[in-house]
Length: 282
Ligand SMILES: C[S@@+](CC[C@H](N)C(=O)[O-])C[C@H]1O[C@@H](n2cnc3c(N)ncnc32)[C@H](O)[C@@H]1O
Image (cartoon, rainbow, N blue to C red; front, side):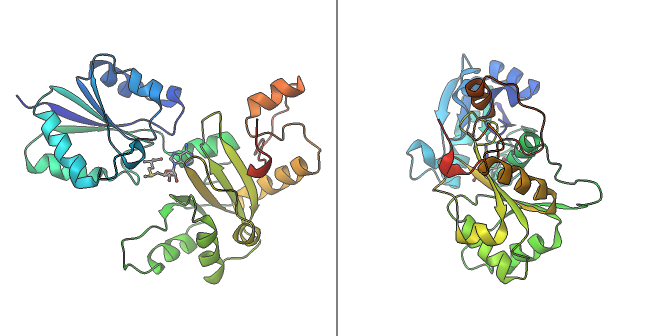
């Protein structure tokens, strides 16, 4: 007996951003292999499944891609319905192709279920369209992490060619990304927003300019982080300036908590609670 593998996007973090199809498959699953960033409540939907954590953050140093590919094949040979749960959308920076290739090579059937990618979740919370009409006609989902030996020009050219850029896997290296963009001629005045743990209660955001970001990076990220760059974020700079001058009461990272604390209903705003990570709390 050989089962079928479903490569399922678990979304950016918040469990209720899972698709209905993903939820149904998890309830039917006999085995689930899941990444470290997947929310425990999502994994728990697979009530009857054998649950197998994969991914480096699970303390498994040797969980390299080949190991995961092999495990996927072995699991499909033992269980009829296998879900491979990945953070965000499996087809974006998710190494989905390697896994699908490994399955295809040995004749195992597979299906991909899309998920909400981190940049979409961050944009939803900011209320800023990645392709705001009249301002941005193109958006690039990029990572500056290139194969050892590859030149940075690969991603720099793409970043310069797009109106809005969402940098994935920029946690810890955001300032280097900013410095490279500046060196390549991007204006220091370009607005950027640093978004950590989008969609989750512990999220933190910080709006600034590219120049300032390269000199004053956020504190070490505690969760997955995106660096969003582009003119569409200019309103976020104004919102953050309002925050730090005390014009607004919602200077904590979690908007709901801010509301509860102040006892007031917030008025609708673009880029709400874009507070500096240093002041984030509670
Ligand atoms: C290996 S990539 C996987 C991306 C995923 N497939 C997606 O579509 O979002 C992991 C990176 O995604 C970004 N990321 C994932 N979840 C995030 C979140 N909740 N908030 C901010 N960034 C996130 C971070 O840049 C992180 O380093």
